[in-house]
Image 1 (cartoon, rainbow, N blue to C red):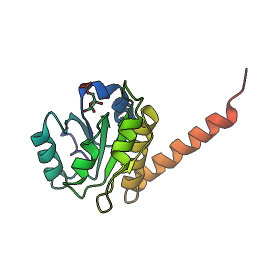
Image 2 (cartoon, rainbow, N blue to C red):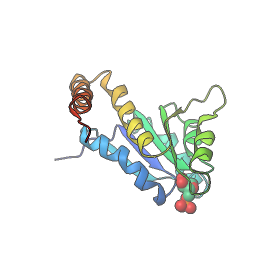
Image 3 (tube, protein in one colour):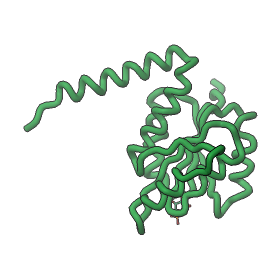
Image 4 (cartoon, protein in one colour):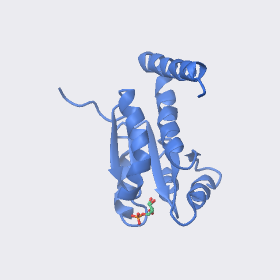
Length: 163
Ligand code: RP5
């Protein structure tokens, strides 16, 4: 079977971001969304980043989830070079616990949007769920899976018992 073309790109500035960004990968896998995962560094591999952004739309990507930590320029610099929606995930940094990442990603100048999520694992999960919600706008089967996920999540809370 030929693999479906990726609809979502999950990129990150470093191998060290994988532990966080794996949560986005897992959610997309669980929902059966064709996606790709790549290390693309704004600072260490700027040409790879430029090429990734410039070719994203023609390759069929519908969303790019970009995670980075510290001086987290990757989401913004990708957004500067494509009109594919960019979902930024601030990775928790060692020195400043990810507040630096969050502020680097969220404070975009007007005209070049990056949708910015929470710091760390929850942000990575939610970025994937947000990309799924975007794709579900014209994919009824995916919309059903998303609704079922939310219902199961609510039922789990309702059924939870305290010790
Ligand atoms: C950023 O610098 C990466 O996104 C990573 O979060 C951070 C640290 O990278 P490493 O020094 O661990 O490779 O570019």
